[in-house]
Image (cartoon, rainbow, N blue to C red):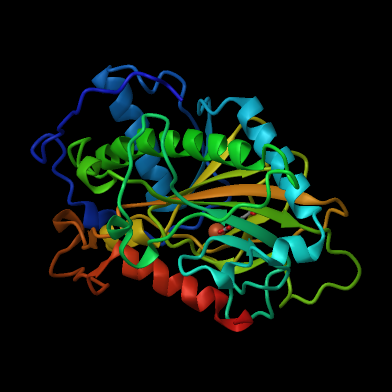
Length: 350
Ligand SMILES: O=C(O)CCC(=O)C(=O)O
Ligand SMILES: [Fe+2]
């Protein structure tokens, strides 16, 4: 991602008098916008404002957008993909040793049908491996207490069984977190907040990464058993890498139509999650999506869910609340919120 940190900008309400709450819309969309991050690091206020406006449009109307020129080097992604392929091809008992149910903080392996993203379904037809924050390259560390209800270490397969797995997964994790840290100020700008609004709320990235493997689903397909059932994500936003040439991800528009999020080579998908919906009182859309792999080929994807620090309260921004649009959600901390959502998702395989 672009390396130069932008200077914080404050766009005052007098310059942009619109009350954000009035932007809440039910407009239907037919396609997912593509936003080019090339040059986004330049400290040119006008260019950043333009980019933030594109992001705002996408968040208000769709809840999804692609980013190009995002700065995550291709080899980093390909190594993570390779690591995922090696991990998921291990014998079942090596994987279930790391079963996510054994961890107190939702880290490790999810077996096929182990998760159920849509309560009306019968389990998701994917395998997964979840990891979270670990030592950063700059040596920054955090105490377990910082993570509140999500505190706990990552789990890893034996290095001998999957050589290089941990290093490859963490390299992608760190790159995606850096991209997320780069995007947060742009989201703030999109909300007419000072660009550094989230800086003190993302000091120890509460970012969960997943390696996902979707076997091909052929023959008669039961609609209640698909790759990942219809759901919204829990954090502020998700950065999703999906495999080129394999169409599976679909996004629900307000008329109930599934719009294909066709993979664009070199791009990433960014989508708003429920934490941002809560911050913005639903001005930013946390849009329902699902994945169904009917391509006949194996599919891999790598989402990174980026939320605020777990002790931060999710409270609607004043600009998104009015007499006509009272706050829709009770105030909770990010940690309690994410943990309760994960508990629901995994309850069916306990
Ligand atoms: O694999 C995908 O394309 C989507 C994954 C997803 O929606 C999720 O993990 O929340
Ligand atoms: Fe999702």
